[in-house]
Picture 1 (tube, rainbow, N blue to C red):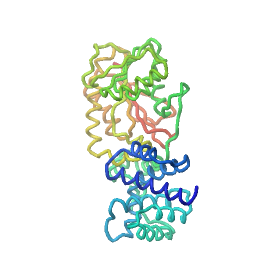
Picture 2: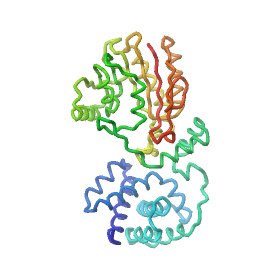
Picture 3: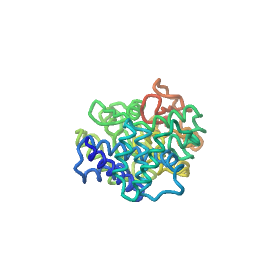
Picture 4: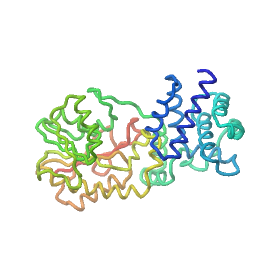
Length: 376
């Protein structure tokens, strides 16, 4: 990498960070699009991606570090340059002088002096006295507070540290990319070849495509037509012919009562167990969303009950770890539907969680998830 290409890579990274912030766009859409408009080589493309994603993920920590050296909040372009520079200094194995020089060269003429002065001051710091864990780990305060309340100090900090690392790539035997925790959810469903299964919130189809070879017939329902297209593409690629797709609202499912042996409600949730997969996700979810989503989850489960054959099973899974969206939802369903018989789950890969199971990201380097089952 030449000095010029290093500055050019930082310039593109600054552009990405600024675009994400100013347009409130998704990082995984903005970054590939901007990179695609350049002639950068593979190494520089990877560098831009790492800096742009990392600067977005860690922006709370980065902003706190450099704001101490500024008399007032910086304008967006300057803030983007400083985030890019400080991210390299604190979180990447790039020599400090290279990070500073390349970032200064990449910054606008108006901002070069400030960027140079601030970055050099940060380089001279032997250590940083963080005000709190939420700032050091770069999460909204409410997420830290929620997990502290639900998991305790040690487990919550360990989880949030783990989700600042890039996720592992897991590939099933059939070639489909799916996190191991999601694969373990499928194992716990216990599909049999004679089963007719409904995946009520199926998109993008990971669990559907895993269940199809294990059962006689799977219905993949989802309310979003564009997400149904993702399922369709996966089914074609994998040559699965025993799956029917239905565009349907899970709260008002258009199926005959008692028509499935198993119904899976892999419900929409806050996604706090998969924050490592999208660098901007932690800044999009709101504290109020957790309680609202718990209500939706309960509605979906209640509507799914009537679709399960007598003696069949209802399965609930979510890629989050809040008590509000896991054990509390399970308890509320038990209260509303005393006819259900909770199935006590056991699996050495998971933690006991009420009558269900939970896995935290630090347990095995997977997503954070929870699963519950009932006999109808």
